[in-house]
Amino acid sequence: MNAGKSLVINGQALANGRTPLICVPLVGREEAEVLAEVAAAVAKGPDLLEWRVDFFAGLAETARVIALAQAIRRAAAGLPLIFTRRSTREGGEPIALSEAQVLELYLSVIAVDGADFYDYELSSPPADFQAVRAAVQGRGAQLLASYHNFQQTPSADELLGKFRAMADAGADVVKIAVMPQTAADVLTLLTATLAARQQLNVPVISMSMGPLGAVSRLVGAAFGSCVSFAVGAKASAPGQVPVADLQAVREILQRAAAI
Amino acid sequence: MNAGKSLVINGQALANGRTPLICVPLVGREEAEVLAEVAAAVAKGPDLLEWRVDFFAGLAETARVIALAQAIRRAAAGLPLIFTRRSTREGGEPIALSEAQVLELYLSVIAVDGADFYDYELSSPPADFQAVRAAVQGRGAQLLASYHNFQQTPSADELLGKFRAMADAGADVVKIAVMPQTAADVLTLLTATLAARQQLNVPVISMSMGPLGAVSRLVGAAFGSCVSFAVGAKASAPGQVPVADLQAVREILQRAAAI
Image (cartoon, each protein chain N blue to C red):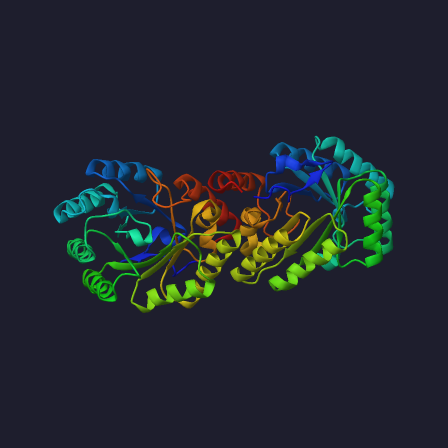
């Protein structure tokens, strides 16, 4: 059901447009640890990888970051890579870099084609966001704008407003992750996802986090989310499920419903 | 998450309250066919069976219906049984009996404890519905009230009104099955299900039918539906999925979310 609304690289739909695409986050602190995660992830057959660079101990050394990005790509057997610094504001790890230094790091990684997608938060300073956007466009890569709320789930209208703001700011892909306090919040997230998928011209990614929200990671594709983040070596966000479970449910849903 | 809101027989929660309970419908035309379906179903490990008596060629012969109900129970290895005549109004098979004869058939089957649950449609004449209710109460069995719409999905408010009307009419269990025309309709059904589960004191069963709705059969339990109908020898309604698929998703959801 997501034809034309899933991730595309060089005009080619990832995994022939099958959804959800399964993404394994890499959360190691050292090079060896990250590369071991890549090998373990690749063996499970995901569709893409996300390097959560805020977990990386070498974050302040641009050359180390670039070298590791390139090593990940060599080890990733052709799997596309999302490069992500998650801020502490939105659930990421504490880091020593200033926002200006984070921007410089992104621009350096983009300049050497270190990844296919670059996650940048909608809550970043607009000028930084646009600088990343321009750099990404200059390299033929893609900007994945994101919004996270680890406390609660805003209303469907607010969530749709966030999705729209990200698309309006020039994002190539839009992502929202929010925490449910009730099962109704999970339906709110799915409702906003479906509306965004219908109203926007960019691929949509969403998840409701934690145990209550885990169901959204399993069946969000039926409501327009094109990527589900699986648990890798360890979870990078609450509620992530194993790659094999996502694969099993994807197969069952495809048999049942041709999503 | 459905503690206290799933099916109970003699004070005992079915399958220790685990949801969804998986129900296999029996749709054979002749005794031998129905009993072969029971054997095939039992081998798959469902939690209950539903005999769709409107498929049965011997429907007009009360003694044959009673004898087969009793044979199903003997063959069912202790699995509880739902006795269901689905009307053509609500997606059932054409039958030769008048509504008055259907009522008599129910009363005869109830009198010999032919089943644990008796499905009677909310759209039936209120006097008939109450007659079934009184008979069921007299035998310590349970009345499962149902509403089906094979054309469309009414609004969440209308669906909640149907659930409430069934509970107000004295149903022990309430069930709604509706057809989605869009993915949004699936969310509407889940929203109404969750509200009914929160507001009513009876177990709730729901499903969105067809390929679009199949996702609701897989994860409806996360939003309050305590039973999912699997495909048996053949589907009794569109979108039903195999027992093994329901079992697999139930296990994955339980690991991920402790539903």
